[in-house]
Image (cartoon, rainbow, N blue to C red; front, side, top):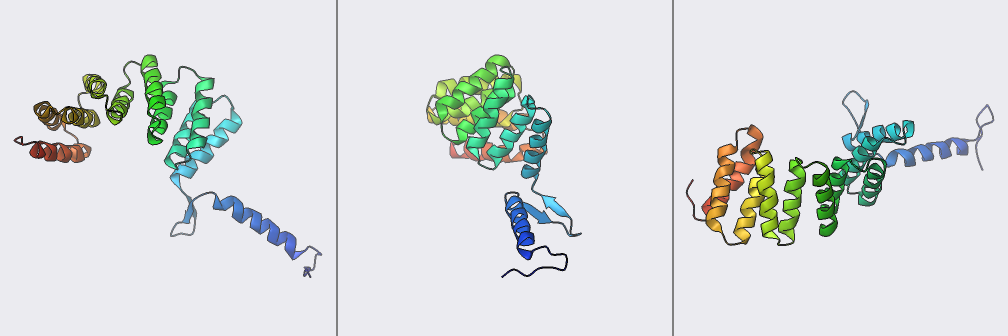
Length: 216
């Protein structure tokens, strides 16, 4: 039995409406601020904003790419691939979209696909430091250490303060049992570290040098 309100509407209808709202909201991570206002998770906010941008302009390759990166952050890889594919379809020369999809493939350990996408990004933008560095990381994963060193060297040539590339190249030399070259690489990292955010990399380099019998 349903209890009717004075205006004749049925409580069940109201309850169904409330249930629908709960289901819709449950897909978004939210919290409440101290003043009671609704706070949406920043990643979900990016997804919503770029979904709106795509609705306004279905040919917005940048919006697809931004939303794809948000999906990667949420580990929703199939959705990410779909968005990166669409971004590349709309703009075949979108280097950032290739590099973003490459990173996603890296997370899935689909190394050949990752390398292929990083290579496409580099072909479009030969100065793409992060694409070189990430491809080097992938080469390290598949034990192609010479190719990794080549990529890290190029990244450092383009940006002598790219800390991650020094670490990657040091690891490559370690894997090749070229310990003095690894020590030299870590020392170069320390010499080029000038920013506060570089400290974690400096700590890694110092520990590596000590492990390898070098001097600080």
